[in-house]
Length: 381
Ligand code: G3I
Image (cartoon, rainbow, N blue to C red; front, side):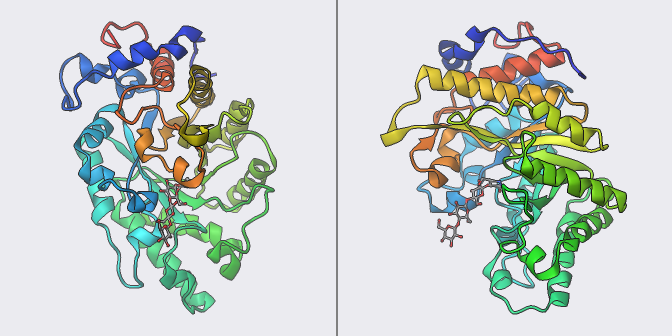
């Protein structure tokens, strides 16, 4: 185990009163010299790992009754700059957003994220290059020969990865290529269906050509523990590495629900990929709960949520090379969960008014413990 982790007192997980007062830091204290900057996830993490967030925008936000979060919500933007050392594009780099027409790339939103990250000294995770979802209709409904499709994918990967070479440190090259039974998505993934499974290796090769320094990942949900789906990745990665394909990382997204048990073999699962020489990461962490008829989360739900967040972080910290842990957005206002799972929600670590939940405090305390900053008076001092 790379870092000694102290077990947190359960009291920290239910410190809702502390959460409210800690959240009193004014949202305008961007990169301040004083205590507020230190009372963050970024400061607590130090150099132990990259602590990241999705940058909310596009996707389900387009049908919501608020402005684009990243460009229209100053307090949110400020929080992203202050709390995190890594950013992921929630929707802004997906095919339908960045390549809306055959000869048109739209880099405005991704460029803005890249510039923001640069100004704040943050890493960027690129998401995503080969996926069955959020592809533009010109692609999915187009009449392309296999050779044309291959050329389209190659151009896309080389153009997008090349543009952000040196700015994006990790790319989710292939996203969700297996179903939950561990079968390759040979029907709903256009690339695999039309070009065969070998296109996955080509995608990694083209991305590597475009940016030899970027770490290239597989990324999926329901692969936190050892199961049929993660076994399928384990087998595929071994084959690709044996063929010399530049695969560098395996990422578990980390979309959990307290309705289900916690995948207690998370560290064991990540470790087997680390043993193949891969980097690992948790890339889209959130923990939803059942809230029928608009119910408010109970203390017990919040405690269990905090426990799941903490255990996911501890699982990552326990594995050499698990160097980034990203939450899939915040606050709850911007979460994808209620849109996709009606009757469920409250999945992020911040309430809608940006105040902190027990889950936030659990992450912060776990990071501080790992970095040696626990107990520092600047941390929630
Ligand atoms: O394409 C339809 C469009 O035809 C329709 O007019 C519009 C009306 O709202 O909806 C459009 O689809 C939306 C899609 O984004 C594309 O814009 C969906 O409703 C909406 O649910 C979707 O949301 C995104 C989702 O990915 C799509 O899969 C979320 O914002 C985004 O947070 C989520 O992120 C994914 C990761 O990329 C991969 N891992 C899972 C994670 C959560 O689903």
